Length: 507
Image 1 (cartoon, one colour):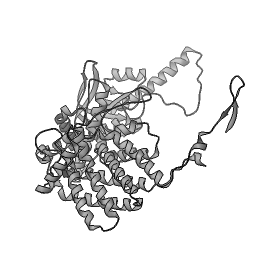
Image 2: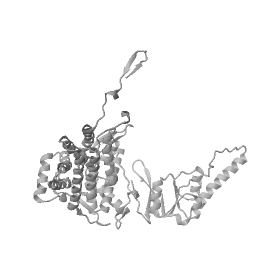
Image 3: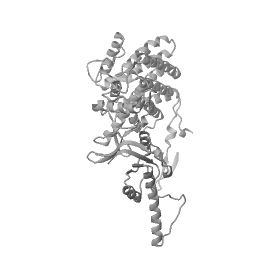
Image 4: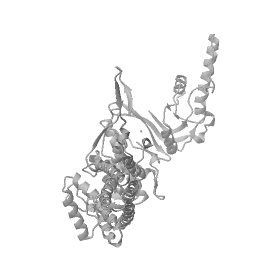
């Protein structure tokens, strides 16, 4: 409590709200933490699947983003709660490791938290719940490997990759172009992939007048006279001194351009700008040049053309020049934007995907969708095992985990059964978002899997007429699905073990 005075000198009392607050501990803290995690999961739940809804997000600057990508939604949400931030980190980890499944992993974590809350109310200790969840996640991960299939593909036979990428693009705004976008993503990944080592470097893929047989000088040094390191001042009081200074400056530029010509360069690509004098000399010597090229783009050009990035003109040699069969400038669109094409390179393992759209929002969402497709293709090259989508993998794992629970006589059995129930949340959300009766649809599909002993049956989100995801060509990568389950379990275990929330104001 404190005494203060207003602008007219009248006294009033300030009551500190902190005195009315009490710190949450024990079961109350755990329930509050679970509630915060469930709120985040509930936000993303309606965005799951091909019929999932989009979210409109407005930044503090007024920029509007429309997307159903889980990582993007959570990244742009203003989250203050610490547990909610853990859910954001969960989605970010899935995006970093796999690149897809960012919505599903949060929905899964939310379902695990909801089941854990019921177990806590029954008096089961959070550590026993966490241990049961750990056992169940191992069972589910092993069962995924059991029901997984191998996809055989090559540089020419890449249809399986396209089908898998189409699955991840089905839930995006750009899904009407999913076939074209999937083919673009697969061809880009195969262009930079090392199939023997099963390795893909996505950094070699970027979303960017004519010279034949170009020899390219790739420079990070500017076309300008050298500048002293210390502050300096030059006094020019006569015309003769000015002419002398100008001739000296011109000689600097002349030497720079001549060095490029002497090594045989027919094109200069520079990270920095050109002085007017340098521009004039380059045109006069018939040496085309490109300025203000970013550092990342310079590296890609060097990789593609086999050239070396040169930091000083003195180090420029013929061996460091990049080579390309054709360099051309092309105008496109109603705005007459221009882009430089470098083609027929010796090592063309650097790919540019060029995206244009009706507005900025469509372009940004297409970029995010293509990123997911690229990651799926990369993951499939690293590990060509797939499971079937539409919630069929989760239903199969739920059945397996439920059956395995009987082998554990302790309290963990309750947590394992709760984990199996949580796995059903993904197919149930898919059914709900598709306008189907969630409980009735899930029960029918689960009984069909058990009756026919077929793990391929899932939710018919697109109303095609069959529940067999193999016939619908709905695939997901094995490592992506395993990562979803393991990451969700780890975060939920972490939340369950928090029994006190301490802030700096408590001391």
